[in-house]
Amino acid sequence: MAKTTVTFDNAKFNSFERAFAESSNVVRWIPAGILLAVSGGADSVAMLRCFAALVNSSTFDSLPFVNSFGEIHVAHVNHGLRKNESDDDALFVRRLAETFHFSYHEFSLNSAMFEADDSGSLEAAARRLRYDFLCQTAEQNTLRYVATAHNADDQTETILHRILRGTGVAGLAGIPTVRRLSGAVTLVRPMLYFSKTQILEYLTTLKQPFRTDSTNHESHFTRNKIRNELLPQLAAEYNPSVADAIRRLGEQAAEWNKFIAAQTERLYDCTVKLCANREKNRAPQNMAEIQVIVRTEPLQRQPRLLIRELFVMIWKSQKWSLRGMTHKHWNLLADFVVVSSKKRRQTFPGNVTVKRRNEFVILEK
Image (cartoon, rainbow, N blue to C red):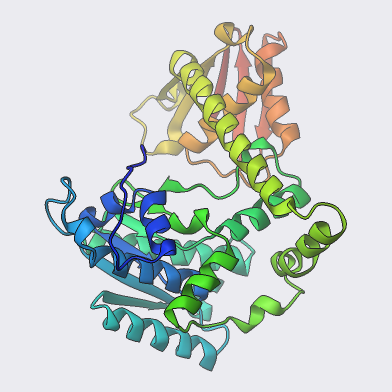
């Protein structure tokens, strides 16, 4: 998505709002309709205030591509994990949305929703439910974008957390600025350009209150330990600019991932074919009856890295679960291509069977 360059010199804008308007494509997102995910914390409240300032700007009204005004809605997810505090957060966000005449949507989570999730992680289950709600709300109200308020500090913490867990190069890219939620809805993160310090200074200037999650200071959560203990220690004892260094690493990894993805797509187009399982003797009833056939001959001269990424792309395109798939598994899949053998067969996590037949590798679930 190409970035739109617009200079805002409206005297009503302060420096943070001007930087927000000029740092991303927000001026193009608004006419298409946008749903702001607002928790009530400093980051999301600052994002809401910036959008409110933007839509009331005479500069915005004069832009040539703003032919019609898309709606701005606000969404809040009440996780219910902090009882009265959670309810107070929801009330705060609803009143803030009403102040700026933004439509308000609320979704409350309950224990039954978590019990129905098989991810094995409360955090992962909450995240999935949250994004499902945001996407569905945007679709129901014909809003093209969903905006969340992840900031630059979140980016640093995410990359460092992934390093500690043992990520590959793809994970080093951190949080993407833009990603597709569905065919009709795109997720955007306009606050990734700003640090927590900048955001707090902006809210102080406005005298704008916000909610504080008391669990953010509980260091038994890994993410909180990284924020409250590890990063300050790294900055104090090793590199005062460690956060900037980690974010630069993320930016470089994102560029590398984009290049590798383009190369992998080219290989996918010339080596991968989907067809019905011939052993069924009928039309396939679902994706589980589709075979993925990979021609190995064009891959013989390719780096092993690209062959592994090709299989990752196949897994994602078929919506097969990546849980349980490790670097060792991707290397084994590459062996099916580069190691000559007339007949081999192996089952991978998620019950995906892989066979080598002459010059082809055949995958099916």
